[in-house]
Length: 353
Ligand code: TXA
Ligand code: MG
Image (cartoon, rainbow, N blue to C red):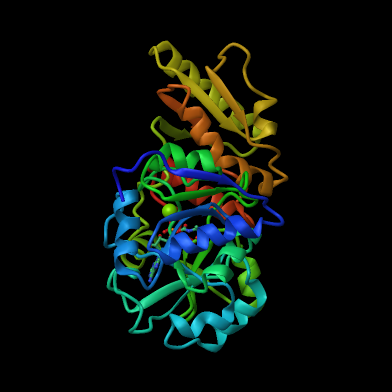
């Protein structure tokens, strides 16, 4: 897929996508093309899941190792029989509760689905995305669509069409630009084939929400996450500057810890940026001004922080910084997913629990 001129970008209405644009994008998928499209979480890089060459094109475009399996996107849970050999009762309950939405379920793979999609595994990861553009595209194409996040492998996931263009340049046939993705972090990946079920990647649906439907689930240990989900290497979501997390019990302590780190770095001649919650930004030390600041929003509003996190990392890395100082978020709800992404951006050992 490489070697084309710049990828074609079409603006599309996020709430009521124009049928003509959807028709063009669906035709492109059916011809074996790569289409980047918005989901409620992040932009995905889609191909017909039953077209091996197109699926290989995804790996080539992203420079993604072939051992890292893709998520298959469906228009509705009724299409599960196209890709999954069985749907255990717990999976059916979760699908009824959260689809369309940011929950990805591991199911036994149907033999007919190309091995490229699942990197040779006998399970397939599936979800029904909640974005009107994604759903319209899936319905119009009438096929399951394999789609990882539309970023260069191991880079920060894209929440804007511009991020896709920045990372993949001429390697995509079509990019549907519906503006910022509403959620901002990827789906929760859940292995429902184990008991109790195991969260391989915390994401848009919090653990407590899943437990309210099917009872206890656990977060995979870091070693399990890497083994079970090959794409879950700790070095992921990495921007081009070094990310360092500064901790504290409350915003004052975090701000103090960031200022201390910043003054050490500044005296060493480094360019430093801050990526922090509003409460922390409000307590910044005026004597150690960073070269750039991105305010993520209030600690009481993790949805806003999720929406701004990846774009904030990308905006800061564009400022030619040596170091981005940030901090962990409250651990409840979406915080588990946010802290997972922050730890990966900082190349830290992953939290378990
Ligand atoms: O929100 C999302 O999930 C976005 C949007 C585009 O849907 N997609 C996304 O895909 O984040 P990707 O490829 O960036 O992440 C999928 C994760 C990877 O960590 C991969 O290793 C894991 O899901 N995965 C996929 N299939 C799997 C399988 N059969 N077993 C274990 N892990 C799997
Ligand atoms: Mg990804």
